[in-house]
Image (cartoon, rainbow, N blue to C red; front, side):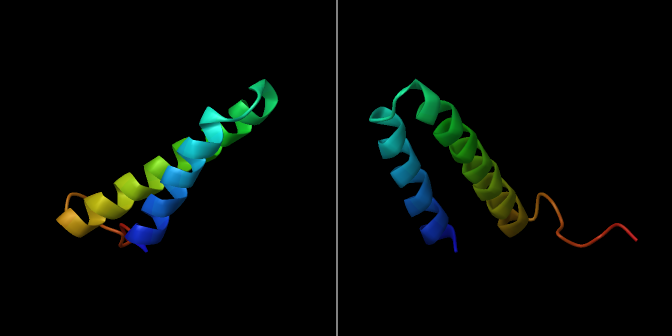
Length: 55
């Protein structure tokens, strides 16, 4: 899944370079979500956070 997410991030960065102002806001929001999702996945893999519920 990480490879797919990395590919999505790269595609969004490429789209951002060629987008007009209206599209740029939407693409930037999608990019921020993808980057945050990747950070969570990496943190879970490294054991910095747990995906288990606290109860």
